[in-house]
Length: 207
Image 1 (cartoon, rainbow, N blue to C red):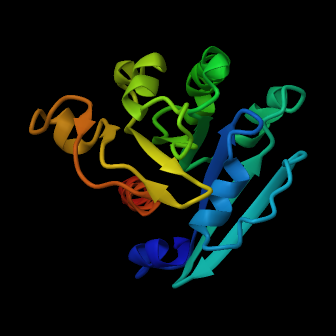
Image 2 (tube, rainbow, N blue to C red):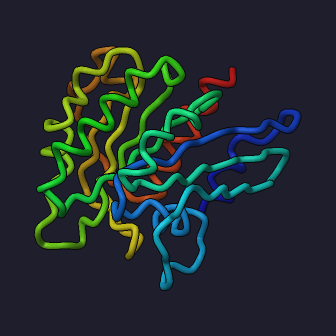
């Protein structure tokens, strides 16, 4: 779970790390956060406003801001972006009617000055549903390959089951350096792999 991942960041005076978790309503943000924190996910209620989950371990304090995705709340998203170390954006892969809407919201977020250069992790959630679009298709629709000002990764997953799939896309260091296939990193993936990527990005930014 989350505790085992952030142990990799130990060894220095206590650091307070800030992660913002965003996405449209019903994307599965709160379920994802509970799953990553190894908590029970059987009873989830929609986030009204925001939740903050803080974890202390080995000299680290990781603050994850889970902010509601209802249309009435989205205008306030930008108020929470300051001093963000990493942005997690969650998409309901099975709700294809809202792909354009969620893409517009993500585009506006990444244009905000507060998030300049901040790494982006997109979770293509609900891959357990038969109507779910593949992560590669979602990445193309979001034009993630056009992002040049930040590291990014898209992770196919099912927050409900905790399972991932076998293909993961991203603009990792190897791909950017031309030592890997552009925009596509093929290796086993899971929710834990997404968290490993988060830890590596935070360590790079804290150097």
